[in-house]
Image (tube, rainbow, N blue to C red; front, side):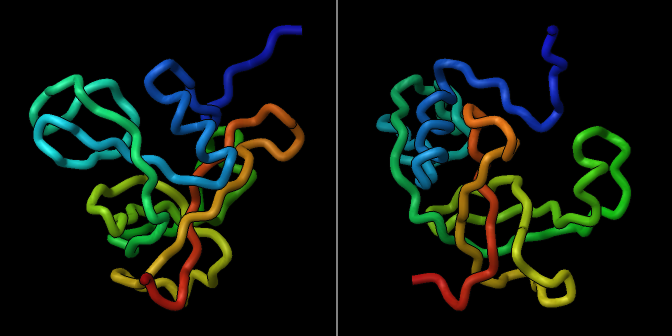
Length: 144
């Protein structure tokens, strides 16, 4: 049986493998550049600021603020259409980088730009024991 590619399953390569393994363990990784000292997210083998290849994964706090968001009511792309409505969001991590994610575990009417959020991790596919884990966020009382 041929496995059909799913739009919500990430392509894991050598540069991103540590990120996905950390997510499975409940930890958010970002990358730090030894050349310029800046941190960035998403996993890649070079610094997007100075182009140095001297980057290494570092543990992030897993906290941040809701930078912007949109409630998605229509998405015809499987498997997202089974999840509507959901909240697509951009979260600014305490460390600085912003990442695309979803906000879960909150009433849509309670969401506010600037509110504190905390990372949680869940499998992309609950039915697959080898499924990669996603970093999603939930509202939190406050960030440390």
